[in-house]
Length: 251
Length: 251
DNA sequence: CGATGACTTGAGGGAATTCAACCGTCGTGG
DNA sequence: CCACGACGGTTGAATTCCCTCAAGTCATCG
Image (tube, rainbow over all chains, first blue to last red; front, top):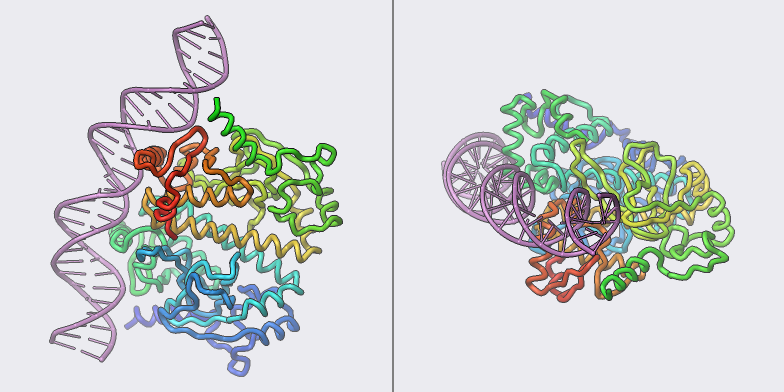
């Protein structure tokens, strides 16, 4: 039906920014459709060729792990398509999703030789995987690239700080509204600007991201719908009153 | 009395790692007692001289601001003595302390030209202040320095991720225990290893860091004391049962 | 179709907050 | 010298927001 078609298109949009990559160049960095969004945006043709030599394309399917917290961090990752869930677990199973990674996001900024969090796929995901060793060597002689990585780390840090404010000091209602508004912005940043906000992650994922339970997320969303702030559709929500949502999210 | 003397020594210890800087070299980077802990640890004598040329020493007293969220970020800061409170505010005054900065910490990793959070002094604080412009220029030609900054950003990010887990998924009891254990580790890292954990910040600060109220912090600490896990002393706590505290904090 | 999984909805409970009072210390000024 | 208020902290009682537990709906799929 129509709804599903729209959803499918939305998901496809997220998976790859431009849906028709040149087949001949498929897999080649120079034809990468998220290059400008990613750390690789700072590389010229020569650098890119070398980068490509040390990178490996990996595809993982839904709920498959990219890496797991505590493991030796042999690789760094560059998300090229799909969405990943980044999370930490407590021994008793409680989970905190520290973020969702979108195409262009870099997963490799870590202070130790072990992954500080786990990452797995929400739907099918493609990444560039590089051995940390090769990557370290690569950046060592390319200061401008390092600068770019630094910018990415800074942006990630800022998001983390926003999230701390949300987790520590916002009500459930504010958390949901902030999440929707922030998520919409991030989708817009990668080129997905539609009225309907795609929510490919589950309610449980949202709950674990906002420090809530699945029931509270569900209840709050349906209340927002009752109050005509949004409409819940398959795979996402359509924002009717963006002004009110933004006001609730007020930084 | 004895308690106050011990406290004073503790505070002095935090303020400056080595209490007797060479007077002749006072204020000189080469004599800086937190250099090895800070980003400047990656600089050689020549670099250090240049760094010193663009840095300015600033002292601020208790509760004075270093910078404020939203302002144009003209400067970056390097904490050399004392402790700073880093926080974000909501329009209605709710506050989230995103971290406490210790000597050696670098405050300058930001993706925009505006400060993403506010910083002010807990007790008296000394910082090296550099214009962002000069700093950017400085790092541009020193890749190894940039690498060091990157390591610092990565560590900060990891701390932020830990804090998200704490804020989103831990109980009040676990939050307090985790905070005490983590804080003790950080103090140890800068050379302050004593039985008594110095807590120079107020109960309100702790509450705003952990996403709790001041009453809950107070109640939980006194309960810990009743249960013989610790003793509350002026300016800090003395940990009696570190095993239990660590278990509560269990990552 | 029966089973399974994602989500919703309702009723009741509880952890932490809110509201309020109180305590001890410190600095100030009458 | 001490009365005083301000301030940081503690403690108690009542409230509330969100969680827990439980049931029910709906779509998907073997």
